[in-house]
Image (cartoon, one colour):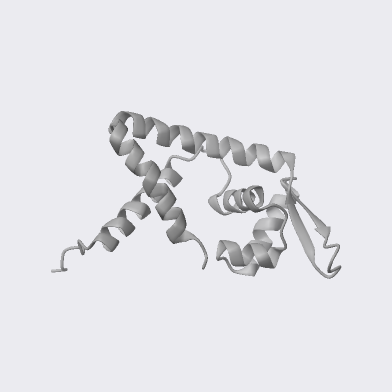
Length: 144
């Protein structure tokens, strides 16, 4: 028989974050963007235009995977690539209006699902605790 799952605070937090992440992916719109594409668009929205190398590092993905994702997004008109003015060997990728609209739609859908769950399952104090926890989770997830 296997031992029971660990109950230390780190393990409990990891499981909760993973479970919420899986649930939010499951609640995505059926015609929504694949999560990898959504992540790239969200990064460009937050950070602005970037080179593929900088994006791969920031998103913690392999450059080859990002290249395929960027090609698909470019083919759909959601990003554009232009030569970097400072280094003509590089390309800079930028979010388009179409990409922003697709990203915003998917994000609004996820936010609405989460808002509904928080409103029905949590009281005011619990919702405030989660808002505070979100800031702490962002700090933990930040690159050093």
